[in-house]
Image (cartoon, rainbow, N blue to C red):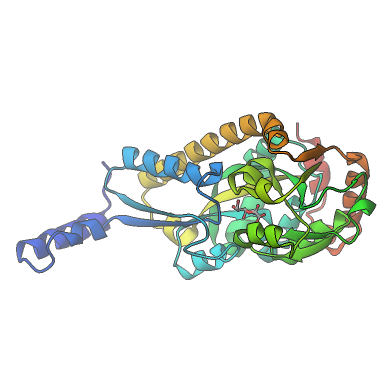
Length: 335
Ligand code: KDO
């Protein structure tokens, strides 16, 4: 095992304290590197379960070196506040969205635009290649986080409380569609033709139940894991955003690791991503029947009409003005 001089020093200090009886048993445990994780994900969702894969991988490759603490359901930090907590040194790891990154690195808003990433394979090709490297460098410079792996969150669909004939964006006019609370998310909701309403993920179930909102958008595995199907009657398969979140670590934490520790943490992040991606892609391909069995209507709109509307909204927006030159063409050309 590769132990840094600092860790050896801490361990020695701990042993000395135990010998004089000052701090029975706790000092050695404190020498572990804390790895606090916060996510709004519900326990049943793949991107919650993947953190256990991360933990198990580290416990195996680096026994006793890391103290991995997993906090689900946004119990440690509110959705969207994770990057700030990481910057303050209160959180080591999180899955941050393109929308979170775009707040500080506006160029990243290209990945918040609907109908840019085509499918999960395209997503992996884009983020695992030179485009990912360039864009993650921006995130590191502007947010002080290192992206370790790209997590496929699923393809976002519109999910309505009451059935409605939805063919084109015009059919969503006046529909109060819940979106996560940032202007980048709201823009996407409006581009779909709806009246975008901001709300934290943890409040969506109740808001659907009580009718404060008319619908929400999320990938289907999340609609199942968070039980939104219990309080909605329709899924409209708009396929509007092939969504990704980025498993990230605070630079302060990352830079303090030894090369061997970095390699183990990166491997654990890769294992977590692989677990999530494989399971989510498989579930997504079979999930529609589940919703039909639950009594939901599953309808396919005129997806081209949605695509045209959403693309026109983005291309005519302030967002597109800061997209790196040629980036959209490079993303489109990535096979
Ligand atoms: C959501 O709030 O709709 C969203 O899907 C946004 C994602 O970026 C991510 O935060 C996700 O929620 C949570 O991880 C809960 O699944």
